Length: 609
Image 1 (cartoon, rainbow, N blue to C red):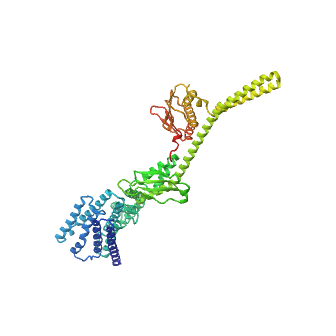
Image 2 (cartoon, rainbow, N blue to C red):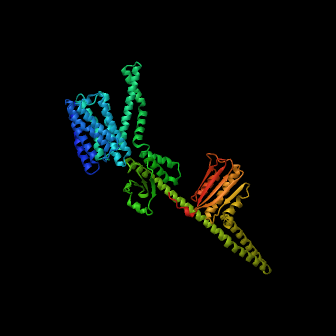
Image 3 (cartoon, rainbow, N blue to C red):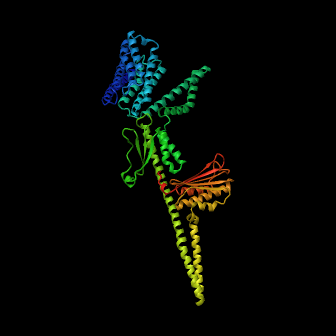
């Protein structure tokens, strides 16, 4: 059985070595890998294959001659893979030291390797080579290079863990019988396999997921092994038998298994992905934020979560084309993400019910040339789950604009009707009343019945005139059209003690805007007078570009930190919102409250979702 396992391990290493050499040569031929690291990698694979078939009975010098190229080529590979440049610069010294060590060992008849510190020195050299790859990883300019190096680091991690496990269980690596050699061969397999995948097919699998899984399993298992060993040692030190100590160790591991695994999961995720969110975490984060935000802020929140999840500093969300409607629906779902040539920026279409309603544009993180597989998965999940929210926000915006247009049209119609009633129908009815009075006066000499009928007609006309005036005044405050917004405010609330009005040049305002401004100021000043116990109230009205801004400040007791919106506060916010504006209260540091209102004028109603 041991011989069969040894043969299987040798065949596996031979297959990886010969096949991997061909694949690395092909990668070098198409310039995917530079010739220096490709040559070093091929030597490592072939040397590893030959070493696996060596017999334990061979003299030390023969084993040394076969394994010597590995100790030189692996640091060379680590320092130059994949572009052939030595990074960091001190890696050249590492290669020189490794070569000098091999030469010194050969000069002394290969006696140095028999020294007790030889294993520690070899491990230190291996760790230095790993440090070279870590530094190169941190300084690599492209995402593909980092993915290649992650495969090698993954293989190195698994190989070191395998050798450590063999050392812990057997007390030595590679001996003395066939089973020990087979274990050593299998433990070294991940490193050479990672080397082949890194050079030939770095995107064969998602290396981040594999690396995270390896870190999770290794860290959790070694931590639990340490807990078991420490608990058993303490129990034995306290006088317990080995069986009882083993039971206490198992119980302690069972109790700590969940927190240890959870901690290992967090640690592994942080080491591989840092603080970036997973696809599920990004979607959950987006849902949590959208649940407590206004519909109009969906685009900003999608961009915010995309930045948090990918670590990118440049994320944008563009609207769909103007003609993307029925035509887009007929074409079906939009294609997958597209990449902008030369920059690594990728576009992710946001499709809802067959219509492309936007595009999420994401740039790579600083120091990387393109998005990783996980980044794409995160952004695709966000685009998929943000689509209904963006469609709802678009529908909300359309409804808001429709409501604003309806309110504006209603108030303009009312202003026109008031003018018609006041300027046209009123004088006409007044003229008819005078004519009826003249008829009644003349008829009094001829026919009393006719005169009485004329008087009744005059009374009816005057009643209609009074009714027309009532309707006219009910449609809109007459002072708004006759004298303007500032005069209307002074007439309604200007007589209150401590009231001050400051207004700039407002010009002609839309009917809906000046009426809403008047009602808001009236309601706000009334609230100050009733509830604030203020000594003064200042109202500032100014035209700011395409907005009418209103500020109402008092020195009263202020509003509670968590006020319960009453009818007055709700009315102010609703009047502003129905015109596409906003109103919010601020607590002043010196006491009092400031109400800030923004009412958009017709030229500012085209804001995008």
